[in-house]
Image (cartoon, rainbow, N blue to C red; front, side, top):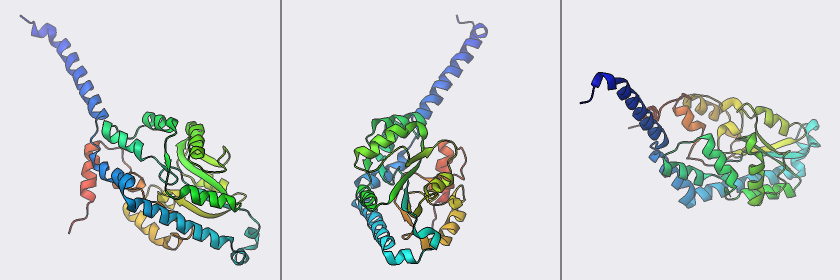
Length: 273
């Protein structure tokens, strides 16, 4: 007969071990089904491709207008002789990482640094439609392109390799500026504008354009968008990204929540009749 009292510590240890294993399995098998439609939209909809081409076609029109000598005469004197630059984000702006997102959904694994680094090392991200053609056109016109991304600095070699492999010209360690400490891109944008005149910024997240959007509530992000409305399609060129972004973090109020809490926040955020 089992001595219950003698075996009690063992039962507790067993229960804790089982609980930890279940918790680990739950963490590894997160329910990410809510992301499926967004990834399919990015991968399978012609509309997504059309929007990307539209963004880069508009960017080219704006660049051509800026290259016009008549435009230069309208600039302040201290900017007329500065060489031009364009600032672009990388992920979901010039490189498509939807396969990485899809693998996460299939395996029930939310975003994590280990998987993200592994995807980057594969160097398999394809170019976003229209990106290579536009940026290489800009380079051919003497415009310096700065790739400013919140990929970590440890990913730099793989990132440069991937950008080159899909056809981007003039990609070097000097113009690929990744995150070394802070997430805000202000300091790196300042570097891009130090000896150049930034003609436009291209990104899929409003934080790619100005720090005015950073860590703001949904209402405040809307308000900042209204303030900057004249810049969109002119100096700010936005690419679509329904998979992830600060827009989702704002729904969670930038909190560190469980999957269940995030699901509650998403449901509560829906606007009903």
